[in-house]
Image (cartoon, protein in one colour):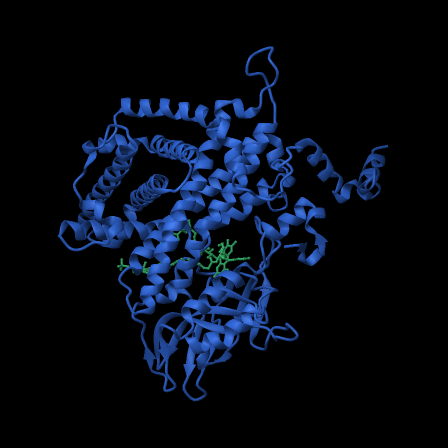
Amino acid sequence: MRKLAEHNIPLREASITQVHSVLRDGNPLIVHTSMFANALASLANPKQQQQWVPLAEKNRIIGTYAQTEIGHGTFVRGLETTAIFDPETKEFVLHSPTITSTKWWPGGLGKTANAAIVMAQLYTQGKCYGPHPFFVQLRDFDTHHSLPGVILGEIGPRLGINSQDNGYLRFDHYRIPRTNMLMRHSQVLEDGSYVKPIHNKLSYGTMVWTRVAIVHSCSKKLACAVTIATRYSAVRHQSELVPGKPEPQILEYQTQQYKLLPHIASVFAILFSASSVLRMQRNVAASISKGNVELLPELHILSCAMKALSSQDSTQGIETCRLACGGHGYIASSGLPSLYTSTTCTITYEGENTVLLLQVARYLIKSYRAGLEGLPVLPSVMYLTAPSAMHQSPPLSNQALIEAFRISSANLVKETESRLCRQFNLEQNFHYAWNRCSVALVHCAELHSRYYMCEKFLSTVESIRASDRVRSVLQDLCRLYLIHHITLNQGHFLRSGTLSGVDLSTLEEEMYELLAKLRPQAVPLVDAFDFRDELLGSTLGAWDGRVYERLYEEAQKSPLNKTDVSKAYHKYLQPLMKSNL
Ligand SMILES: CCCCC/C=C\C/C=C\C/C=C\C/C=C\C/C=C\C=C\C(=O)SCCNC(=O)CCNC(=O)[C@H](O)C(C)(C)COP(=O)(O)OP(=O)(O)OC[C@H]1O[C@@H](n2cnc3c(N)ncnc32)[C@H](O)[C@@H]1OP(=O)(O)O
Ligand SMILES: Cc1cc2nc3c(=O)[nH]c(=O)nc-3n(C[C@H](O)[C@H](O)[C@H](O)COP(=O)(O)OP(=O)(O)OC[C@H]3O[C@@H](n4cnc5c(N)ncnc54)[C@H](O)[C@@H]3O)c2cc1C
C-alpha cells in the first residue's frame, strides 16, 4: 500500500477520500485474493491447482467468483446458467438461457477479472447434477478483451464500495475443456459419466470459507469505527454537564459511554468467536482431505451463525459510532460513512443474514428432535436437551448469566418446535408450517448465536494469558457485554424464568457502574488496536487529536476550493440571478 496504485501518490499525501477509495470503498482484487483463491485451493484437484494457482499468484490470472445471477442470489439450486457436457468434443458448453441467468454482482467481474470460478447447473448424459464450479477464462490474457461468446459489463453505481467494479456476465454457447470443471470433489469422466462427491454440499465450500473470513473482517471494521468515535469523543467538548462549568469531553456523558463501550466490547466478542470458528474450519478442512465429512454440518451452521451476527453487530456498531460523532460523523473525511457502506453489504453478501439464520434454525429444530429421541447430536447443540444447571453458579455471576443464555435458548427452541408442530397439524404441510413460524425460528437462531458469542468471550477471557491489569479490563468488558445483551433480550430471560425483574434491574445498575469504571480505559483500549493514521483514514480519529485542523486541512483538498468563484456560478447561478432582473 506504499502508494495508492492508480494515483501513484505517497500514502501520507493522499487525500482521505483517496485512501478510502482503495482501502475501504472496495478493493477490486478482494474477490481474486479471497474467494477465487480459496475456490482453487478447496475445489480444484492437485493437477488443476498446479495449472492455475501459480498464474493466479502472479496475477497473470485475475479471478472472481461468479455464482449470483440477476434472478437468483440466495437460492443456489435455482441458478440457471447451464454447463452441458458434449461427449463428442469432451467440452462443457456454458450458456445463459434467460435474462435472469445473467451473472450479476461478482466483484471485479465487470472490468478487472480475466477469469472466474463460475457456478453452473451441470448436465451430462441428459441428467442435471446441480450447481458445480468451473474455471472459465473470460478475457484474453494479453489484450484483456472479452473472449468470443462471453459478454461482460459493469452493473453501475452502488451504495458503497464504488472503487471496485461489480460486473455482469452472459455466455453464448461458450465452450470450455472438460478439465475446466473443478474436480476435487466430483468429476465428469471422458465418457460423460458423473462421479459424485462424498458430500453434496462440498461445492459450497468457498462460501463457508468466506463467511468465516467475513467474521474476522467485521471485527476489524468495527475496531476502526470505535477507534475513530472514541478518540473524537475524548477531543470534542460540548455543552455543560454542570451549569457554569467548562464544556466537558463528550465522553463524560453516560449516554456517550453507552454508545461506545459496548461496541468496544463487541470487537473482542466478534474477534474471539472468529478465532474459534477459524479453528473449527481448519479442523474440518483437514478432516475432509481425509474423507471425513462428519463435522461439516457443524461448521456450516457455525459459519452461518457467526457471519450473520458479526455482520449485523458491526454494521449497527459502526452506524452508532457515526451518529455519536454528530455532524462531523457525517463528513466523508471522518472515515465513518465509508466504513458503514463497506460493512452493511456484509449483511447481504455471502448469504443474506435471514436466510443463514434460517439454516441455523433448521439445525436447531432437527437437533432438538434428535436429542428428544436419544439420537446423537453434535457438540454445539447438545445443550438443547441437556438438564439445566442454573442453580449451581452464584446468582448473577458470569457463569450464571451464561447458564441463563443457555437455558433461555433451549427454552425458545422448545417453544418454537411446539409451535411448529401445532402449525403442521393445522396446515398438514411442513413447509407451510415452517414459513408460518419463520420469524420465531430466526429469533431462535439469533439467541443461539448470541449464546455462542457470549460463551466464547467469557471462556477466552478466563483462559487468556495477560497481565492482571489487562485481564481485569477484559473481564469488565466481558461483563459489560454479557449484561448489555441480556438487557437487549430481557423478554427471553423473563419467559424462561432464568432471570427476574429484580435481577434485570440489578444488572442494569451494574451496567451503568461498568460504564463509569471503563470510561478511563476507553482511549487506551482503542489505542491498543494500533491502527496507523493512514489506514484509519480519519480526520476525527487521528492519533494526534488535531481534529479541527485536520477537518479544515482536508476541506482545502476539495477541488471546489481551487477557486474562490466556482465555474458553476458563471454557468448556472449568474444567469439565474439575472433572469429575474
Ligand atoms: C487484499 C487481501 C485480501 C485477503 C483476503 C482474505 C480474507 C478475506 C477478507 C475478508 C472477507 C471480506 C470479504 C470477502 C470477500 C469477498 C466477498 C465479496 C463479495 C461476496 C461474494 C458473494 O456473495 S458469493 C455468493 C454468496 N452466495 C450465497 O452465500 C448464497 C446463499 N445460499 C446458500 O448458501 C444456499 O442456497 C443455502 C445454504 C441457503 C441453501 O442451500 P440448499 O442447497 O438449498 O440446501 P438446503 O437448504 O435444502 O439444505 C439441505 C441440507 O444441506 C445442508 N447445507 C446447506 N448448505 C451447506 C453447506 N454450505 N455446508 C454443509 N451443509 C450445508 C443443510 O444444512 C441441510 O442439511 P439437513 O438436510 O441435514 O438439514
Ligand atoms: C457488495 C456485493 C458484492 C457481491 N459480490 C458477489 C460476488 O463476488 N460473487 C457472487 O456470486 N455474488 C456476489 N454478491 C451477490 C450476493 O451474494 C447476493 O446479493 C446475496 O447472496 C443475496 O441474494 P439476493 O441478492 O438474490 O437476495 P434475495 O435472496 O433475493 O433476498 C431478498 C429478500 O428475500 C429474502 N429471502 C430470500 N430467500 C428467503 C428464504 N428462503 N426465506 C426467507 N426469506 C428469504 C431475504 O431474506 C431478503 O430479505 C454480492 C452482493 C453485494 C451486495
